[in-house]
Length: 269
Image (cartoon, rainbow, N blue to C red; front, side, top):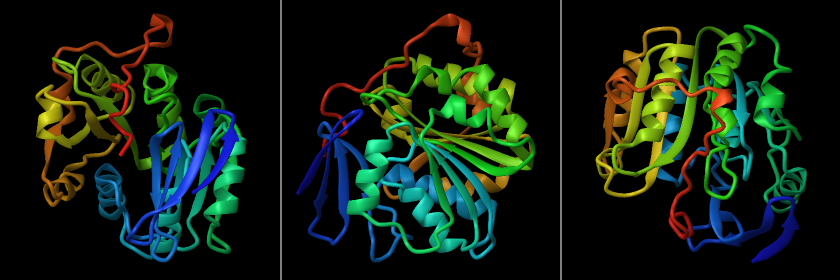
């Protein structure tokens, strides 16, 4: 195991029996990387995001992606391998962590991945209008999604940078009774971006355990992005974004809310 102090805690990289490498920060799982085959996505929710990418554009077709949250750069590696010559920008404020990852889990040569040491909100404001195919939000601080990455103001910034037909994908966590948080984020995406779908395990949607909830929203129609979720093993449920949102109100910067954190140890394995 390799260990280093970074801005957000103590980062470790450890080899797994299957040849992959796991990145943790303060014991919490951040990424699993297969250096031999970057198209191999180990985490279930990451495979669902990979499915959305594959549904959005065929393999070998270059895309432009902004990733908010870097960690082990698993998804940027996936895009670089499956869609060479893609233009990718990663917004990751922990520059110590990025340096650690580059040293211990080197990126492929000519990967086309540029990492900027800024927060998601600061970085998205610097992206040109109508220049991005996908915005992928997978960012956590102490196992909670930064609140300013799920508000209406942020959603409108994403809409500004998306090309016509572009897609935003958010990885959230919830599992509380009533799913108040993800319902409000769903309402936010409906209002600020457009219609979409939700991919999550049934137990999470029923409020019987914390886990990942992947929201997909786009100004375009997204029925072609629904089918990938049905291939998940174990199966993820697929819901229309509006069904999850119900009568919830969008989140705004002015509320000063705090997004829910998973119970300690939820993402330790």
